[in-house]
Length: 204
Image (cartoon, rainbow, N blue to C red):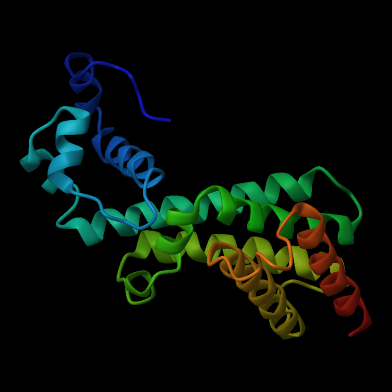
């Protein structure tokens, strides 16, 4: 949520190196009100009460900020899936709830989700974003390995993990694009699709 603290009260924290994180937070809050990423560094500078020059010390351009925002999105997605899976002990249930968390994240943060998987992020040289993206994928891979009773470090997990990722990502994208409106996009439909995938995976 956007902070209601006055600009006069904010700058003291920036001397401790919090400005970068605050800019990312403000960018994410602004993105939550949009359908696509249309972020202005100068506008964010005014939002947090600092000069534009202070912003450019942390981000060379808008693309650098967007990469940092995408990285935070991947970290949040990884946490959401981990927390959802952690509420259960049965491997298949853990897999199902992790998948539901993935789809729910996309539905709750559509603009951020599109940013995370947008064209610019694929070619981004941001190591932070690459590491965060790998963190999210590693969580998915571990969940698939657990559900199939396989070692997550083996090649045998790669194809099932990519299958699971393709499923939840494709399902999320279809929902965001409004392609499933005639099929219904409530939780029951999402659950049925994920359960079918889980059953199919167990048969492989």
